[in-house]
Image 1: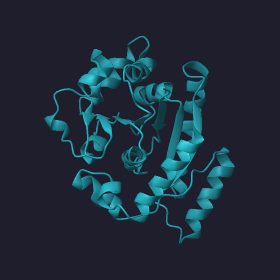
Image 2: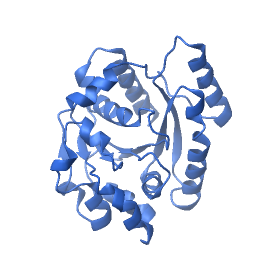
Image 3: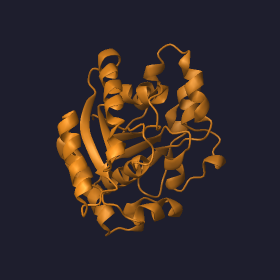
Length: 252
């Protein structure tokens, strides 16, 4: 069985990256896929949003990456039907711990290879282009770039694509950019639509459809410790992520 490893990356914060990881994971699980989500952000937003308090955890992804702990000893099953490799604030030390280590680019790939039985592993990258993001891209078969449909939000895309280019050259020839996923999209504004067109032309990237609409429901879901597919099952946002999950599965 081949596992699809998808890195969700954008060094700009506030683009609904974590929401995308949680919602896509839940949507794929609904479709009968076995899914592992990996929280690589020291702020542990993904862990928190799936109903797990990082402060209650004794082991986390930090121990897998820096101490060689077996991922199976850390993975938590969540109520959303996905498994989670959780993060804690300790992960902030991992960047420093890994900087001097030989083969640091491969620590996440090794951890992913040590997990078994998943159709999808989705990596929630930190909002930076540091060691952890490079290691995530080295482990991934594809990268998805969530992008808020505003002018300033796509200025970082060029930098991210430069990093992807370097990773392809040095550590992961197989890496493909699957495309940009428009988030926080307000289709009523010409501006949002123009930004979308500009992105696909400027960077020659596929735009993953449908765009994820702006919705207060997304803010409510993490507070409930569940994904939007569980808190607002029939809402537009939940349906958009189901459609994106279907199109990603068609791609592979």
